[in-house]
Structure formats: structure tokens, C-alpha cells
Image 1: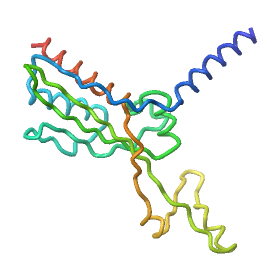
Image 2 (image 1 turned 60 degrees about the vertical axis):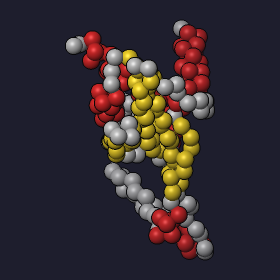
Image 3 (image 1 turned 180 degrees about the horizontal axis):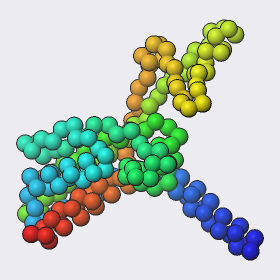
Length: 191
């Protein structure tokens, strides 16, 4: 019985570790749908993004694009969040402050609407507090209470804070395109 428990533990550990391996940065393929127009594809896409907790920043029918505001990545315990796809992304969002921005582009080609999805990943970079003397060593730690942790940032650090582009999230791109496809095809079937 102990051997089977160890075997199960080893399989789980291998699955978790393989899920945390750095993901490939290969962009997702565009999703081409027939039987829909750009306007209905954009409306359905907006609903999918809002359902995934993204806030629409711009939806321009003239340019045929939709962009979202940055969405801070969900933590490992936020099981309802749909923006972390795979173990690597869950771990990265739990260890760092990550945000994702979605851009959708729509074009009509030979009776089909093709949707291109780009999810940009950015990580917050906060410079370390500078320690100039032994007396200022204590100030490198933020004060916290039992119920709430806080982060104190001095004005110099705040001026140097920035979001660093760390690439794309092709797994989330694929999930978004699949959800849009499912929403638009179920809409066609329901008519």
C-alpha cells in the first residue's frame, strides 16, 4: 500500500513539474468561421472575453479589432479564474505579478470571418529598496499585520516600476479562440 501511494505521489509530482516547464511561444493559428459576419463575430467575442473576466478597452468595428484592459493573473487558489491555462501559467501568476492583454483582429476572406488572437504577457518589475547604511537595513522590510500583508514602496521605487513584456500566451490564445468558435457555432445552431 505504501508503494502504490508513493507511485501516485510520483505521478502527480511529474505532472506538476512538467506543467511548470517553460511554455513554447508559438502563436496560435487564426480561427476561420463560415456563416457569420464580422459584426456578430465581434459581439460574440466581446461576450466571451467579458465571461473570462477581461474588461473591454476598445471595440472598433471600423478597424475590426477588440482590445482589453490589462487583467492581473489569477492566483493558484482562484479556481474560478479562466486566464491561467496550464501549470506553467498558474505557477507564474502565483509567483509574480502578471497581467495579460488580449487583442483580437477580424477579417473577412472568401465568405469566412478569420479571427486572430494575441495575448500579451507582462510582469511587474519593482526595483529593490536601496540600503545606504546599516540603520536603513530595517526599512527594506514592509510592516505587516497578521490579517493583512502590505508592501511599502518609496517614491524612487515607484518611479522605476514598470511592466516588462515577457512574450505571448499561446495556450490562452487557443482557449479564447475555441470559446469564440463554440459560442458562435452554438448561436448559429440555435437559430
